[in-house]
Image (cartoon, rainbow, N blue to C red; front, side, top):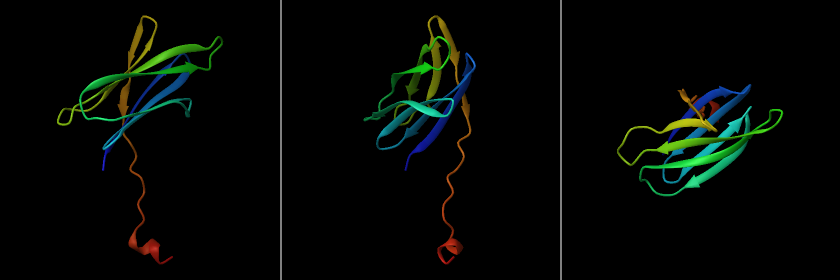
Length: 109
């Protein structure tokens, strides 16, 4: 069972969120204003950096990169930054809400 991390920042009037799921297969996603705009599956457990490209719905549209630094097997947590041209904005980690699991009482209802 893997761990989930979420990173978030506001840029150019848009809400940008990166989701990272660590486990057997690592999954990376970028959401802009709540809509998924980039997704990647990563195999392996060595530290590496991945860049996902997103287009912000501004006028005119802006291309940004979301750089996700993945940890190794026994090292720390991932980190994330939004890069737009020469501007680099660190994305703060947000708490991931736990997914509700059924309780024994709900099985009988």
